[in-house]
Length: 575
Ligand code: ATP
Ligand code: MG
Image (tube, rainbow, N blue to C red; front, side, top):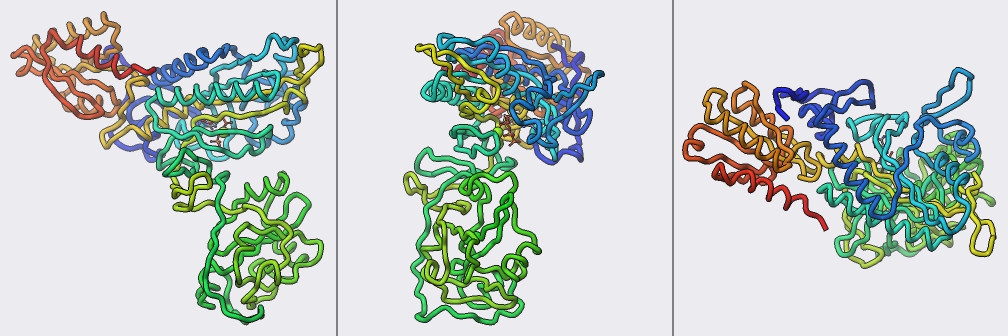
């Protein structure tokens, strides 16, 4: 390819609309252009990167026995009604009608379509396991489309669905995909962690991992152990309760006046007690149930744990002021657990019963109870792990300190179980002729998001630094003069040689200053740059530079092509 012919509009300025570096660089390097919020056109170089990631994904899916199919993007509402998701998916689902007023949606995911296919085509256990996948655009009307390809409303996903005879089979398929995902993201040159995640609304028999690319701009908080391989989403990560051995004064609990004290900070200051000796009391409403949640004042409640522990509500929120008033006769800021009405469920985080004494709200403005003994002065109905883990805490598995990091979710593997096969009737006959539901798993890779994640991890102040396996071209040739005929001719000769060796090479034949060409080459991030200057060429040499390390050295013209090829082959090797 010749740069003069390439649609590659690079920008010097950072576009105002782009907050994160990957978005800025994708626009500046001329990889994508926006058409509407969350919708992008891939320009030639951007599309090349996308296709490379797709190819890696495809190879790894095929290697595990995956069979590629292509399902429709438009999905009939009937199937979604059968699975029960039409009513619960909410505003993220793009819904539309055809000329006959029949309802459809644009696929945000394809469990319904694939299960419908399988129920029609699979009869016997002999056909299982079956792993079917596709690579295709998905549509989600995200509340906040942002960060370019990171969170689009149209994006490219690889989705694979596994169908097995039983849980053991599902486990095998899950492991295959887990391993394939590790290979995919390693091959893309990414630093990532598979983290235990919350099964959330998709439901299923449990077991799910998210693959997180570690980057400061990541939207997800993850926790990983410094001593072992434990890693989990912040929402999911488990913790050890901490026992505090403070000295506590003798004496019974008593009501004290705390004028103007509203927050835990105020309280700790006013009474001169550490925040870890205060108890936060929160009245919650989960669907039509109301309960009181207790957690140490210095801790953060994890609503996802709370919701999972209490059985999974459709809606879980802090009770409104009116509801607090009705239930406890006070403002939300004064809520406390002493004398909680009978029938009001009181759930406490594990650490609360371990507190020897504490300070808590009194259901009365400007007052608190001090010297309260949990379990004695306070009724606790259930003790649960309800808090957010904090950096430095001991790992539940090995005891080493946990670390916090930000992550970009590039993939997820999920054990679905029989949720969809039961709802839609995807059954098979086992060895004994008994009809059973297929046991399913689903596995997604955010192919387009992976481009953004790769840039977040691989860039410097000059631009993108593509890992070789996903670079749009492996090598760029830059003649620094358009007048020196030796330079021009040698550049063309090397370009031809490299093409003959099947190297993905691009020649910057533009009539531009060398500085402009260098800037663009760094911005786009080609892994290898070959520069031809009049002086060095007079000695029969050209300059070879590695984008990543910045290493530069002179190579004889006749050795250049083979050296470039060898370097590329080495960088592409992966066992
Ligand atoms: P998120 O929590 O980031 O919204 P998700 O968990 O809803 O993602 P999945 O249903 O697990 O997404 O989809 C599989 C993969 O598709 C994700 O791991 C992610 O890489 C990618 N993906 C999901 N939503 C988007 C989006 N709006 N834009 C780009 N990629 C996305
Ligand atoms: Mg996910």
